[in-house]
Length: 241
Image (cartoon, rainbow, N blue to C red):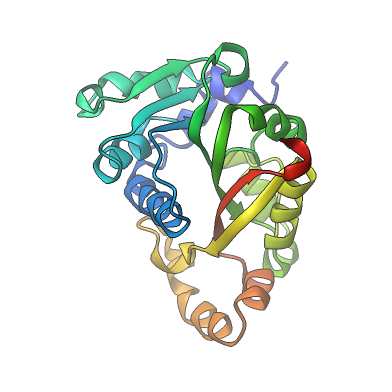
């Protein structure tokens, strides 16, 4: 029987996404480095939970040259990328398996970039990660909008193609982190629908109305039209430390 995890273990995710979103890696790494710098965080160690093919860490190697970088993923298909291209020369350690089962280290920063919307129980997943870092950076797609609900099939397609089983607005995403024991230090919209390297024709065609609505009110525009993601930096809430 197919399970939530099986798409990553048995190759379904790679079949649906043969490029594994590698073209967005530099853009995401830039957002991670920028929000760390804005908070004055200079990590000696960074761990990416759910690192996929590892390209974000490879780009972070250039942005954080002195940091020890480690990536974890459960997918054997993702692991196939770790010995290809320049990844093998990047000085990044990759580990195949469940982070919570095999990790034995604490890091200055843990990143989860498009991760907890994929997992069966995001609250438990997030809570179990808290002891392993001082700071956390999240990239969170905001799939839930008036437009995505009105179109009917949009969220189902996101579920089928990229495996999102939980859907968020900005407020719901931030509340999920708070309810899981995190203190949000800063969040930013990334302008994904307008600036990310890989955008569908439909997304590009919707750029003009999004620009107009976002210019009037970014929160309202994201709730109405979608097309946004969040970059968030957080730490364990004081009551959890």
